[in-house]
Length: 273
Image 1 (spheres, rainbow, N blue to C red):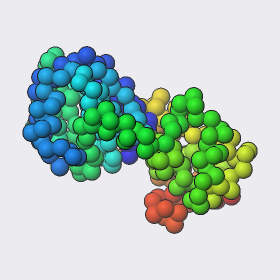
Image 2: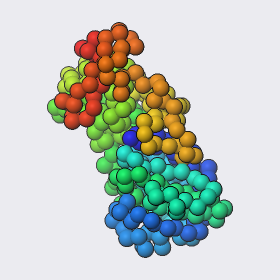
Image 3: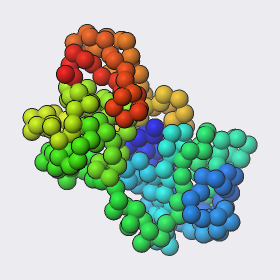
């Protein structure tokens, strides 16, 4: 967390407040979230710049500045980005505060400071971008492309669709949900998934991610939208976090295992043979 739907929600929420806005002041309160740049250099580079665009790539918020550089934020487990009216420096979890010319603040909060903030040149961003897999909600992400990605290597299918070099943006929650919807055992070798199963999995990935975005993401603990609200998709989860509860499709009990990739894998032994 946050995964693709949460980061997409954050981007949509903050975009209208940031695009075209001039940065008046930057304060880095927790410099350990920065990667590859010192606090003073980060503050100096951003001050006086304008935001040209705000978008998402995989699980990253990407904010382009008018000098061509990009502020790239990877929230990881406990990070969140929001626009606020008030000063946020008294909040112990605010790592970076950006004051805009309008008087509003852009706050990067990170409860456990597991996230990362980069300031990249166009060349550095190009190399970073190239190392990520295709976007699962892009028109170019077809069933045949998914099939080609699954055919490489010996990974379990759950681990394969979470590999950011193969497919960008899917994390543990939505991998569990998509595999349940597609009726696929998460431990199956990815290259053993046949054409019919690939079609079901492709449809399930697009469906789950789209519905999660429509619900503003999943809040299990720390995640908040770009306006500080909780997501709503947690009430719609079919398997994740439901160990021992009845499957909504076949009524068998949901099972939890950590044997596939060391993470919590929830599945139905009846539906996902």
